Image (cartoon, rainbow, N blue to C red; front, side):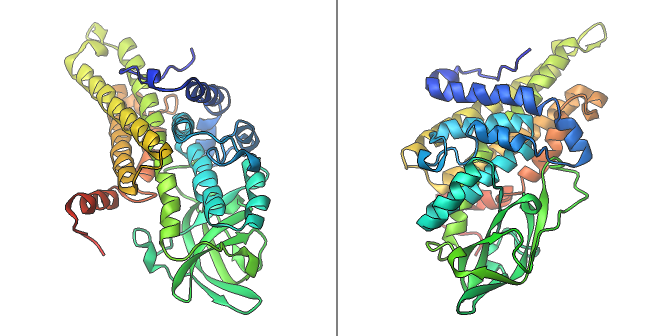
Length: 388
């Protein structure tokens, strides 16, 4: 039976025909291409590379960017629905598309030269090239301004030294958008695969996001051509703008994880018989299921309004922080409660719940921890910064 998402408040009536069509197209793609293979990829710790071209053909990369670069030119609500459906498949698959779109194509489009845009964006949109985003360092996560990666102007080129960590797509990427300090000011650089002094070893041993490639980026006297600097980047605001795009996609994406955990728990509760009747008939189980419907519905409305504001250029980064903070926490709690409803069966990969739960532990941390988003919103409502 085809998946029918939770829509307790008839939110679909607030979507355009095009938005519904895009959502349903990706929903079918997930059913046919991701769900049949994802548990094996997760178990093996591999990313399904064969999905890249199929995702590109459906316009999942750089979805909101102009058609002249080969992009789908969707609105932000439609893009959010794409992220929602992909994460219903797996957070690692959504992460791939999110990085390619929000953290690679967006900065090239926003901060790049016309030559950089004309060369890279069509190749990234078509899936011919894969990108990664290098900001986080081994000792600097929540405080990116403390980065120690440095670029030095050598006259006819830049010399890059330093390291980045927890980089999605890093090992398989053809180009990395890398942030480094040049004369103490943060700038973005395009570092291509095969550049002398650049290596991107994959990080192994993960219990989370196992169907996603996570890497280190290491730069040792790495020679970067002058034309590879993103000319409109100057200061930390540029990479933070990129993160804001990614956080928006995450806020939508985790609704997909939450929905699949809810539907799995609901179907199980209706068929699991204990003491002569289905466990769905017991008050405590019903309270858990109602909590899921309650929280998913709030998250859906939060994202829909945020997407509409974003399409009107009226959204603020603090609003994105609130949505990321709320929705990831919501999805993780729903995954945990779904596992409770399934009991011991909840740990089996016959069901997707434990995989989503483990993935969401990472999603809660990356692109700004729950605590950092709390403080971002806290500063916004009080006018007092609780951190420097």
